[in-house]
Image (cartoon, rainbow, N blue to C red; front, side, top):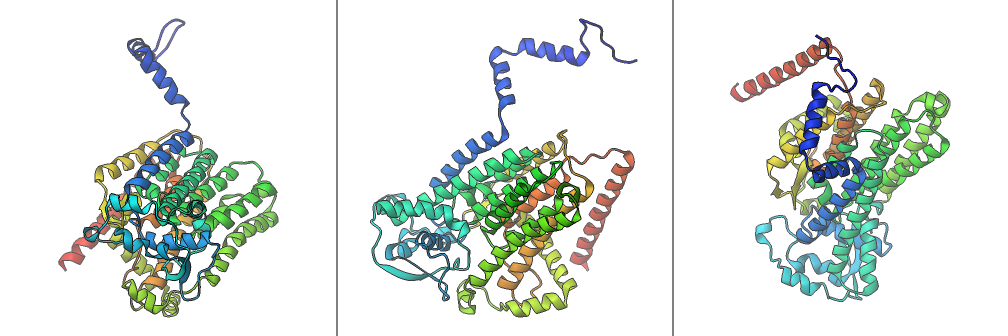
Length: 479
């Protein structure tokens, strides 16, 4: 029996909706109307700024990974020392160099801290020393771009001559503001999947990096902006020269806030040759964007002081030989792929936790309920019915770019932090994979299984992997 409606008659679903509307108070109806008008980018801006400011204040100084080193590097950039000395030192005021030790909170094991809010308040009024000294920092090899927002805050503190600690907090605040504003415009530009970018942009780990002195804040926001720029251009009938110039500028600056992010310039291949007027112009324009990203990345790499064996030993890293490691990888590529697989298999759970959020010096584990709710939200967002103008090969490019970025991060850490032929990559942290998370989600966003055959094939593939990996784990453990 088919469902029909005559003039003046309501279908069953419409009757329920009409009844609910009569029962709801006018206030609830008005609230619902307001929620319908909220734009995702404005929601993100308000929540990220409020939450970020709370983290700026609540997290003690130097309690973000490598924040003492980033503090010294940001101060040197504020002094216009864009390249560190060959001996990995930067020139800073004396009481800036000594602040991490004096404030009592610059340690990994918080149980050994000597920090107190009263001491911090007293240090806020300390005048900046006129005497300068050379100070070693493990962040000496980092380029200046990622430290520009914190350097602005530090410059303000220098202008009023108060104080090393005030410069620290103003640097955090400026880093947060710049990063959040970039993501705000990225969400506005993104043509589809806006809730996914909001969610990734509000991961506790994402916000904590934005609210620190780490260049990761600007690197993550820059990566999200580049993704939005490329995908917005991919929806256009024709990509203009102006569009290509904007992509080149974004690749030059935003993808070089931190070493390694230039690989994300591969996303430019999401553009189709027909949008650029043919293969010749397509090759020229994509080559321009890639060259812009990698030329700056190469220049930063060549001008950065190399980490010495002694400096790595201070950090507990031994047996590192980048040239020897590269030789091993090039002569045994399959062995390196096995190393990557073993690394992700071994550390999948802690890396997933860190991607969502393990704060402080990776010591403050967050409740699992938050991560589970985020996973549920992702599932619901992926089920949205929204027009997504991507074809299969474009989705492949997006996911392949994420995979290439993950592999490149693994290779970089394998060469710089791992002993030659180490069975796993040392030094991987979850926050490196936040852009990968977004790319994978956008790559599968809007995919619909339109036939039962497709559902069956997917089910067979998933179940086969589950069975094989389970049996492998059992055999490995018992035999």
